[in-house]
Image (cartoon, rainbow, N blue to C red; front, side, top):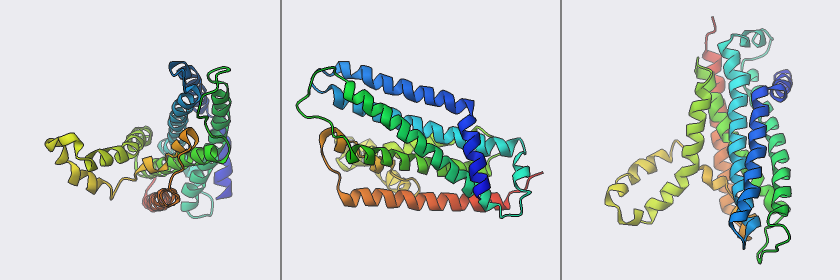
Length: 266
């Protein structure tokens, strides 16, 4: 398993497409700096809000491109057969690749997180807003939540890659999964408030309730209100969101291993 992890780590760092995503992440952080100009009273808060959205988007793209290149393309090109010649269970390949992507995502999250914080500190020039953003543990806990979010998306993409014969399918379905999981909480809250009196929309409530059994609410891993406004999330909510994410990760990786073990390569 360690050999699969290390080889994926080296390949992930050398990937040209990942370098392009990194450039995109830096550009998105730059957009966060420019967005501060649209709020003369809270430039740092606006920059942090936009920047965290950019970091989340970048981490999701990182995860999907890494799964596509390190698993999807190897299966499509049949180079995975060389890995399967090792006298180890097939599951070690899937788990090793997944752990490698998690490590690469952690490195990307730290780099983008540090860059974003430098941008936030310099947003607004010499202007000091009345309620400053919170540095330290609050900020990095928020980055951790975004990393867990990306870890769930990675597990889903890995499961798709273990079944698919099309290398781009994990990328396409992964993007849809990430978008749906992020918006699920907002849709549920909107329906719980009565959908502004929209009877037609309220008919979708049973469908959304059923989706909750299959799709994780990734919005529960977004804790940006803490560093932005000093509003601490409930510890139970943090623990609950993290435990649900972990359960989905274990389930999806297990399904990926089972699917990969049963797959025939010709």
